[in-house]
Length: 129
Image (cartoon, rainbow, N blue to C red):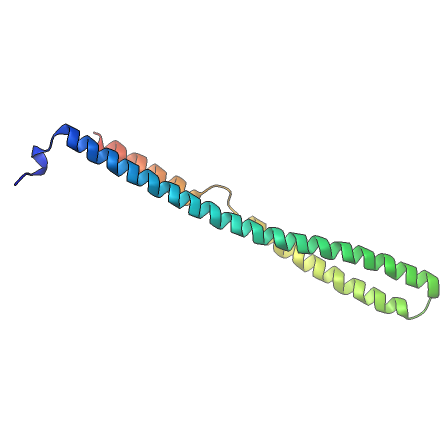
């Protein structure tokens, strides 16, 4: 029966190298997962911001249409256009605020990976002492 004390230095170093390789592979997988998750968050927030931008364009268009109707006819039809302008303005504000809040939750750095890499460096240091 061979104990831990009878292992050669080469065997120990080989085991350490294999463990380090496994750790590095795990860290790369973790980093990929974290970056993918954050990219998905950014994509959703960007879609909301794009929706807000489109709504803003329609709001401006409706304001201009309201002014045209008001000046051209001075009839109640412009009231309906103004009401639609107010509704589109509210939709625009809601989408832009929601998109801005979502962008604040996006983290550019893979924090979990950085933290575990620090732990792994400490572990490797303790194994080589």
